[in-house]
Amino acid sequence: MSGQLVQGSRSTSKGKRKELCATVPVDHGNLPFENNENLWGMVESLEAFDYQENFKLAPREDIKNDLSLLDKLETHGFDVMKLREILTRILLLKDQQEDVENSLKESKMRLTGFDLVKCKAKEDGIKREDEMMRLTEEARLAGFRDKEIDADIASDQWELRMIEDELTRVNMEFEELVASPLF
Image 1 (cartoon, rainbow, N blue to C red):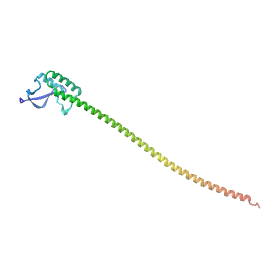
Image 2 (image 1 turned 135 degrees about the vertical axis):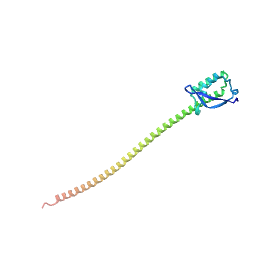
Image 3 (image 1 turned 180 degrees about the horizontal axis):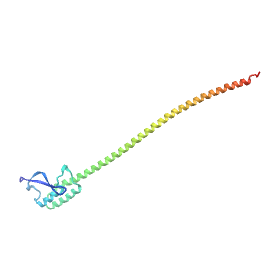
Image 4 (image 1 turned 120 degrees about the horizontal axis):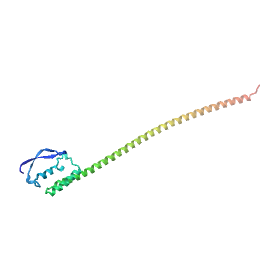
């Protein structure tokens, strides 16, 4: 290492350059390519080299564009194999992440569907319980009505017997009166 410290910078989304806090020792002899300021400026402008806070990943199209730019850099003698592997792995992980997120969404939708079915079943159960209670009450009231009717029938039968007995008594009295001598 030459011991020279180079302070890094990056482009913001508005194209302005922003100085990074850290300085890094650079050994120009270990670089996998010739240090060319014009090419290095182009490399620094690539989003693949932007500082990604909290491992935030660039959109898929940006990564694909970066991969195509790496192909161009490779034709100029840059060793981009490791970076290409990282970006390819990032795309693979993004695909896996999307698959898992889609599976999660589908699972949540199925759970929501099951919740709706469960709520509907509970509502139906409550309606059936209410209907059963209503029918039970109607049956109880019908039983009371039956008992009342039975009591009314028994009362009417007793009254009928009393009337029949009175009629029999009156008929007997009449017959006695008719059968008795007149003088």
